[in-house]
Length: 199
Figure 1: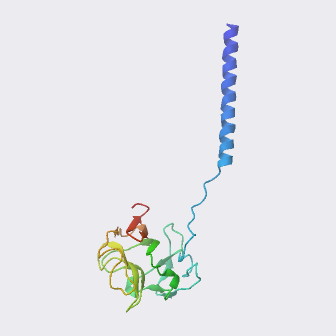
Figure 2 (figure 1 turned 60 degrees about the vertical axis):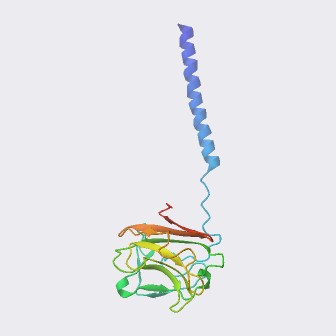
Figure 3 (figure 1 turned 180 degrees about the horizontal axis):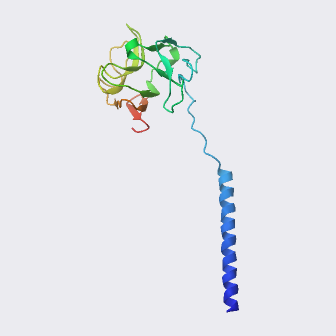
């Protein structure tokens, strides 16, 4: 009986020691591993207009001219960190030609933005880079009262769309009253769109 009690006590001490060593090992591994590195979202970036308290392209330092638009809360609820455009006032922010915002001849690009739309009863343009008479470059809009966003990308003379005739396959269903993240990605051959991270 005494031998049995000593064996039980021995195993209990072994288990306690193993638990302690396991905790030390886990703690050591966590301290060595640390947090994963943040993704690189700035390399190759040519235009960044976050509307983060101002209307400026953070890359070139070009300030946009604000017409009727006002600052509003963003998708996190932070006040003054987004821009509200009232279509009744034809609200826009005009950055002029903004040369860095033109695509190069490969037509490879990514356009990323957060949008929240009140309704789809009228035409909506999120982004447009085109003159009245040309050059027509690109635009994200809802194709005149439709409930989807598409991105048109024209040749320099505005004669044809590079990634297909309207409506494009890369369409985003507009969900009124909800924030949506849009990422149009083109590789020179085809264009895709991610909505809230989903293709």
